[in-house]
Image (tube, rainbow, N blue to C red; front, side):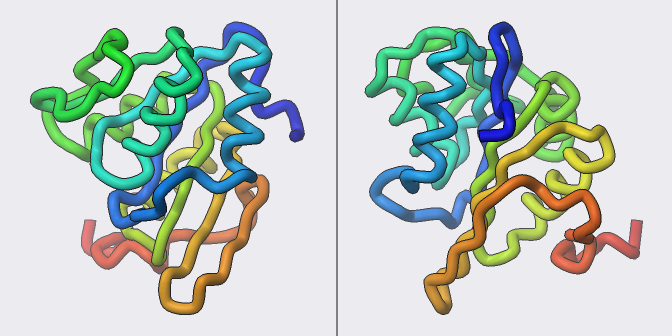
Length: 162
């Protein structure tokens, strides 16, 4: 499991809003279970897709050490947990949630540009990250620790214009 969580550590849960599975993949729930067993705290967003599945899973397990991160207002909070405004817009929220975590679990579907940018931030800040990649066109899955040598810049359409 490569030490994805340690007691008292903050684990960021984020993922593509396009992710429409009925439940989290086993590879992901195994890591969530290990993090819960070690007493980790979680930061999770409230967007559609993967974030809601993360929230639903934590709520179904009755886990309480969760903070729901949002920007302007909160749209979803499956467990009635504390919430925290991490910024005034999506980019600021994502950046501040990444800064606040110790490690991350990310679901990335169809090479989403927003998630690609977040993966670059996680790499830059040297945050240990478990990445579950899903391609909806061919159903292929790649899962494992974030590769610090891999570039995700090509997946963000406006990267070079900034």
